[in-house]
Image (cartoon, rainbow, N blue to C red):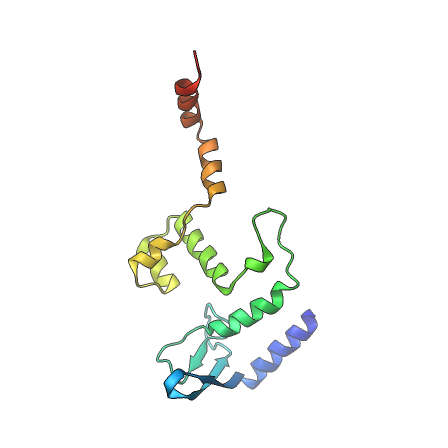
Length: 157
């Protein structure tokens, strides 16, 4: 499996990347053809295949390609035994969500985190990083002063 992947990556590198033409129905506009081009980076970039599309001014990641790869990989994915990971619920956005939560958890400045995640809206940024019930319960249990205070208040004398 890894050998086949390595050979495919080398093939793409030798060919200068990969180009795929696709057609999509766009409502009243009818069928619209896009050409997605992935090129091997010439400089050190964070993305292995930065996408360039004829209908977009800037470089973007093609979410459909990412989603398809995740759907294929999900079938063989074995998560760590932590109990919270449900393989069927893993989506392309899961990694983005995790990355933004990590940024917030490590106190990265809001402006830096938003720029890294390509988020312009403050409301969208605030929507990430909400605690789960288990995380809140663990945090409350680990707060010794709070536990002592509650014991003092609620223990019958």
